[in-house]
Image 1 (cartoon, rainbow, N blue to C red):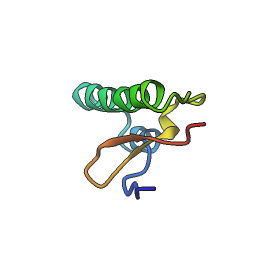
Image 2 (image 1 turned 90 degrees about the horizontal axis):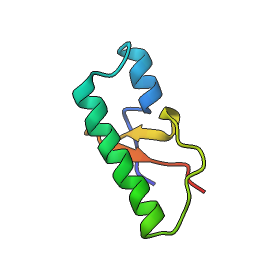
Image 3 (image 1 turned 120 degrees about the vertical axis):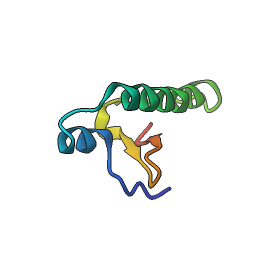
Length: 68
């Protein structure tokens, strides 16, 4: 598992009092791509999609985690 040094989207939103639209679009696309990979390639379903389960790595790239 990779280290996500910048926490999760929920913590980011609380700390910065929201997420601006360009960042939200970027992270939504990244999270959607991760979910697409889970569904189409790994045939796995993520049953708990929320801001707490989308982590930000050292470069502020969104990573989906805690999938079942």
